Amino acid sequence: MDTDAPHTDTPPDPAPPAAGTAAATTARLRAAWQATATAAGARRDPAPYAERLLAAWAEPQRRYHTTAHLADVLARIDVLAPHAADPVAVRLAAWFHDAVYRPDRSENEERSAALAERALPELGVGAARTAEVARLVRLTVGHDPAPGDTNGEVLCDADLAVLAGPPHPDYAAYAAAVRAEYGFVPDDAFRTGRAAVLRHLLDLPRLFRTPHGRAHWEAPARANLTAELAALLPRA
Image 1: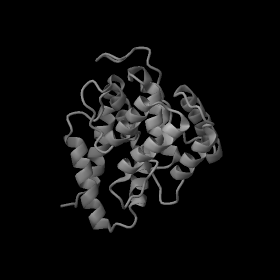
Image 2: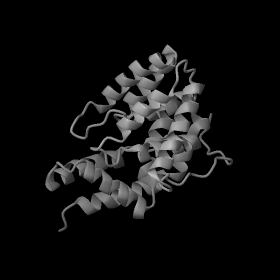
Image 3: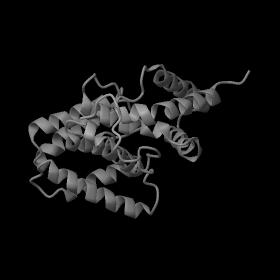
């Protein structure tokens, strides 16, 4: 596991997996699921589970919480994996953390965790690892892992790493996708709600808990959040 100092041999951050076709991304995700499910001890064919999960991640109401987001989170986990006590559980949690997603609902994480609790034992994953996956999915409600929760730190940092992207085009595209998911919300109400989210994030003592996240993502993420908040506020 990592100590408080970043590893000098940490691999460079991957580029967001936007290059190539959607079909290529889906093929990579299928292969990643197969490898993770096998490592988790799956006793049934993992392929049908991949198809159901990928179909969920491709639902039409999604604009940000898509297969591209899933691929990005998994790529970030690859960077942070040495910090985790159980990287396999973290990767499984990434697959399930937004598997149930409706932007007009508040129980998405709970329903996603419940899905993991049903699907993973059926696949053949052991009870302890299934419980850990469900715990990690529920942790993404607030992205506030306890000190020493290395699995939670890796998942939450990977999920929030999008905040540290270059302002243009990456962060701007992320912010636009979030707005599109909430297209049913009037502009004034969206600005109020989004500003509250940004203030909450900026008020956190740390956005990122892993050494790599603190070293590489904290400062650019705070700059992006501050700039977005300023753009949302009414001009004097």
